[in-house]
Amino acid sequence: MTDFSLIETLRYEPESGFLRLRLHLARLSRSAGRLGFAGAEAAEARLKEAVSGADGPLRVRLTLDRDGAIAVTNAPFTPLPDDALWRVRIASTHLYSGDRLLRMKTTRRGVYEAARSEFSPAEADEVILLNEKGEVCEGTISSVFLDDGSGTLRTPPTACGLLAGVLRNELICARRARVARLSPADLLKAGSSLYVGNSLRGLIRAELLV
Image 1 (cartoon, rainbow, N blue to C red):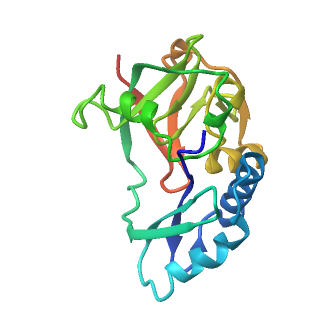
Image 2 (cartoon, rainbow, N blue to C red):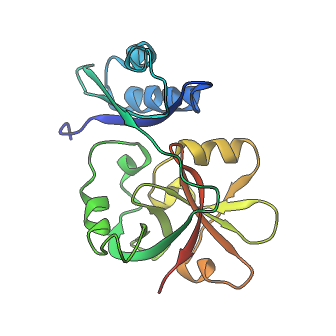
C-alpha cells in the first residue's frame, strides 16, 4: 500500500519547545525505515522552521510522503484543564490485530473515522476500539491506560493491533506504565481508574459509558 503518508502531531510551547520531540522523531524515522519512506532526516529542521517566531502554544502536524515530501502545518492550541474528564464509549468497529500498519501513525484513518462516527460529540469525547478478539486496543486519537491501584498504569501491547503512541512509550520507558492485555470488563472494575492520552494533550481522566 502506498496511498498514505506518515504523520506526527506535536505540541509546541514557546518556553520549552516541542514536547517529546526526540520520541516523535524516533518514531517517524523508525516507521520510515520499515516502510521505505525517504526524507525523515529533514523533519526536525522543517518543524523548527514552522514555529519560528511563535508566541503561544501550537498544535503542529507534520506529514511525510513515500517520496520524502514533507508538509508542516500549525494551529493555536489550548491545553485541557487539569480536571478534565472525558466521556468514553466503545465502538462496534473493530481493529485487526494482524495489521502491522496500525503500529505506525499514518494518514490511513478510515477505521478510526468510522468508530468516531458511531457517536456524536454530545455522546462521547473519545471512542475506544477493540480488536477481533474483543481486547481493548486504543482510542481514535489516544492510547488507553488503566490505573488498577498497583501504582503502575496498564496499557495494551501493540500486538493487540494499535499505535505505539509517543506518550505511551514515554510512560513505559519511565516505568510509569506496563503493557498488559485489557478487556472492556477491566475498564469497569471497581477501584480502577481509566485514562486516555496522547502526546498533544497528555493524560486525561476518562469515564467509560455503557
